[in-house]
Structure formats: C-alpha cells, structure tokens
Length: 101
Image (cartoon, rainbow, N blue to C red; front, side, top):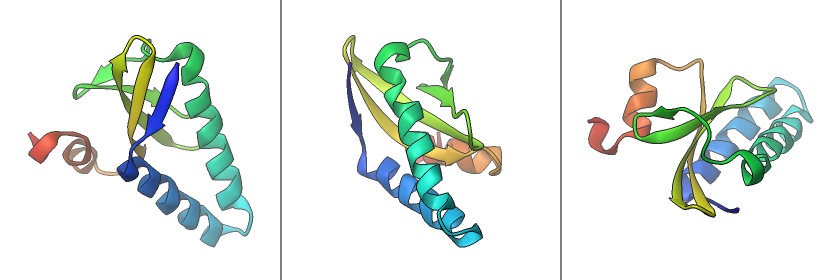
C-alpha cells in the first residue's frame, strides 16, 4: 500500500506536535511518532475503517485523534486530515467536507 500525506494533514501533525510539546518537552515527539505508527498500520489495514463524511476514519491508539483518509486505488491512499477528537463536531465536519457541505 502506498500512503501519501496531504499538506493539510502535515499541518495537522505539526499543530499537534507543538500543542503536546508545550504541555511537556518530548511529548510532541512521542505524539508524532505514535500518529506515524498508526498511519503506517494502514499499509495492512487501509480501507477497512468506517467511512465518515466521505472519508475513511481511523481512531488513533494513543492520542485522542482521528486520521481521515481516502482510498485513491486499491493500493494507494491519501491522508487528508489528522484531527483531535475533542473538537466541536461541526468544526471537524467543516474541516473534512468541501465547503462545509
């Protein structure tokens, strides 16, 4: 499985890194490595997660985050967002749906 990460999702990872790094030095690195391990697991499990608002959603194992991705082909997927689950659901939906539809 080929996995690509959109620039928006890279920004989400960076935001999460800095949020957790401000909480405790080193926690940002742990956050990033944990999320990347979850993304890597999609090599085997990509495409089996529930579809929410048009994207597959995988719940992260260590942090309260969700990884939203789309299947491009049977062997390729793109991570479109990595979002905290503690946000207002309307804000999450606005972030992952085109024009908040």
